[in-house]
Length: 209
Image 1 (cartoon, rainbow, N blue to C red):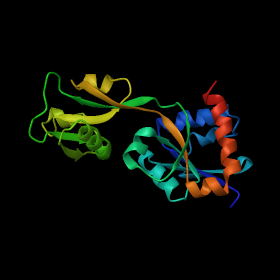
Image 2: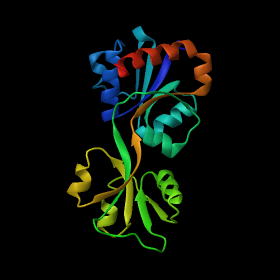
Image 3: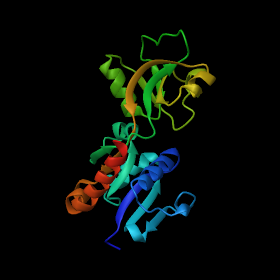
C-alpha cells in the first residue's frame, strides 16, 4: 500500500480536464475512472491512488499529507494560503477572479459590503485599494447578493462572463488570473521526489506543447 502515490483531485470540470491531461501524458486511467462514484480510486498498474474531493478541500488534504500531490485552482490557493509546493501550472480550467456588481453604481463611502466565497482574497484586494469593507461570506449563488441588497459588490470567479450578464451584473475590476496547478506536500516531495518529479515532467511535456 505504501508504494502508492496519492493524488487529490477536485470533482467537476477540473477533474474532467485533469483526467484528460493525465491520459495525454500516458497515464493508464481506465474508462470507468471518469464515471465512478467512489471517493478513493486506486490504479494498481500505475501505483496511483486518487482522492476525489471538493475543490476547496484539495489543498487541505495535501497540506496535511493524506495526499502527496494534488490539483488545485489558483483561486483556492490564494484563498487558503496553505503550506504546499506549487510545482506546475497545468493551464487548464482557465478563468479569473473579479469584482462585479450592478451597473452604474458606486460603492458606499461608509464600509461597503462585499459578498464572496473568497473572503481572504476579497479582503486583501480592497485593503490594497485603501478601502475598508465588510466581507460577507457566501458559499454559492454569489450573484444574488447585489440583486437583493445584501452587498454592493461581489468577488467571484468569472469564466465566460455569461452568468454575470444573465443576472444583470457588470465587471468592475479583475483581481487575478486563475488556472489549475499541480501542488505537493513538502514532506512527500522530499521523500518521493523522484516519483513526483517524473509526474511533473510528463505533465509539463504535454502542457508546454
